[in-house]
Structure formats: C-alpha cells, structure tokens
Image (cartoon, rainbow, N blue to C red; front, side, top):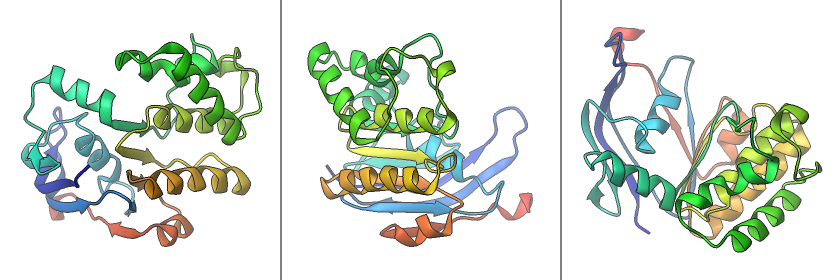
Amino acid sequence: MGALESVDVSFRYPRTRDLVVEGWSQRFDPGTVTAVTGASGSGKSTRLYVLALMARPGAGQILLDGGRVDDLPDTHRAALRAERFGFVFQDAALDPTRTVLDNVVESCLYRHEDPHTARTRALDLLERMQVEVPENRRPGQISGGQAQRIAVCRALVGCPDVIFADEPTGNLDEDSARVVLAMLREQADDGACVIIVTHDRATASWADVHVAVTAPEATR
C-alpha cells in the first residue's frame, strides 16, 4: 500500500464550531510506527478520527495511496474502513452483549470473511496477546486491561493496512503494554502503517516517527 496523508486539514466541532485542527499536513508511511503527542485539547484523537474517515475535515484532504478519500460517499468510506483500517479506541468500546471472541471477529463479518478462518485468527491473536479468559465471557466479566487487549485483537484480526490506536497502553500494566506494543511493531514490520496517540514519553521515543501537535492559536 501507499502512504496515508493529511493535506492542510482543518476541523471544527459541528455543534460548537470550535476550531480543533488547523492546516495540518502529515505523511504516514507503510512499515512505520508514528506516535502523535500533545497536550489535552490539542486535537490528537480528533486527528485520528479524521484520518480514519470517521469524521470529515472542514477543509483540506485525506489521501490514501495518493488518491483522495475524505470526499467519498459514506458507504464507500465505511467499506474502506472495514477492508483496510483497524482502530483501537481509548475506552476499548467492546459490545457488552457479545462474547470476547465475537467482539474480536465482528469486523470480519463486514468483509464477508470465512467465519472459521476469522475465528482461528482471532483465537491466535487472543493467545498471543495473553488474554487469559474464556472466549465465551462478556466484557462485563473481564478487567479493563483485558478489554483493552481484546480491542487490540479486534483491530488486528483483519490484517489492516492502517492501524489507528488511541492510547492503546493507557489502561495496561508495564508487561501488558510491552506485549501490545510488540504486536503493533510486528504489524509495521509486515508493512502496515501504525499511528498511535499517546501521552507516554517512552512510547513516543519507541516509535519510528514522533509527531507533536498543538491546538490552533484561537483555542489556546
């Protein structure tokens, strides 16, 4: 795959019209891990949502493989997210009505993958991520750290080209964080583009590229 790029991107909150991101241009190359850091309110997570086509920029463009993708119809954007992107939310965002295993393989349904293949891959990821809970448990029966590692498995199960991770180690102890970062590094080594929002200095220094962002002047 080619690079993911933001080109002079700006974004305002729809309701308040507050400017959160202004004139942001950044290139993210396959095979690299990029850490995005900044103070609270600097728009770090917003940038991930815009890059991942979950929010439309008010100005500027998002390019993937050299082609513009932010202006695609909603159905095309959704298909692109399902087929090529993986996202780790800050709060895990697991479905409480589904089992651990079903949460991991859920994204595979949108890609019409073979259920047996998806299940096998999911179980392998859960084992490698050291999620030592029965696969039929539900999110309400596991710890926050386990939920976060399951969320990482869900993001990786489709072998995405681009992985977005919003504070993926924020709820983890040191050993669990090391496992998660090793898995993300492995994805980059296999050619994926990995973008991490983090407050952790060690994670930022570990990444191949460190991007420090600030809030627009009007919001400081």
